[in-house]
Length: 179
Image (cartoon, rainbow, N blue to C red):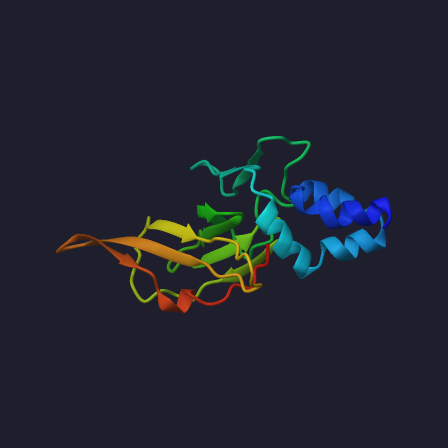
């Protein structure tokens, strides 16, 4: 086995996304390997370091990404302009973001992977979430299956019991936004 094959099979899965983008330029074989869903699945189970944080000031329409190590970590579009409208980042979990549109009226939710720039617009929830919902995104990369699933939970104030939780079943579908 050649050195490039040993590195491909045993090292690449431990690298952050920015480094992988650089490595995909080494040769066509590595580019194909890194862009495969099998590799994405493997890498999501081996790379567990925090790479940075998304933040958004009240005066800014666009979010930004603060890298913990700008030489190693980053995302292709830190302002999330690949989404169909300007958004507010609401929460995150293991590399996925939950964002909410900034328009007037109904503000849709989007789940996206800022590294691959893949996203999904969620169906409109049954319950009214109000103007500033408390959201939690629950996502754990699967160890043995390739179907990526997540849960988005919203805490809603209730007139009778303080809070109730909305976890709209229409949101609990397999997610096409591969890591």
